Length: 206
Image (cartoon, rainbow, N blue to C red):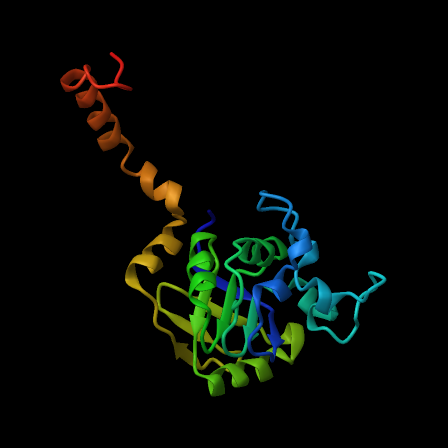
């Protein structure tokens, strides 16, 4: 998992509440267990019409937002089913940070596991950031995870809260497997002791 330290990038305004995981990545694209290749289907029903043509009014089909790395939305982002494909699709498109007043719990947990930073800010602040984002490529936001601030184009610094342990994981690029591998020497020592002390147990081989 890539580390998340400081991100400066284009933010896409998505003034919608209750954006569920089926909007983020429709169920018909869940046939893969790969984390790559889903970005082309991100927000598929919002981005494309029934014939597969782009809907020009949708933000990610417009100018600089095609390369957005930050997404700003309204309440209850990521609600619906628990599919982990939703953060996979966001990450594969290039989104590393989602800002919203709140998130569905399972989606919120899944973002951290995949290197995406979810930031909770009040609705009024999200609306301000959307106005900044509507200025396009000339109005980039900066996310400083170490300092826990969002920096607006005018220089204003907006503080956000984050669980210290999850902050540590993102800063160091640690997913669940990486966390476990940090303890590999202890695990190896434990298994070696089991072989020596309990070789009589089924499944223990010398």
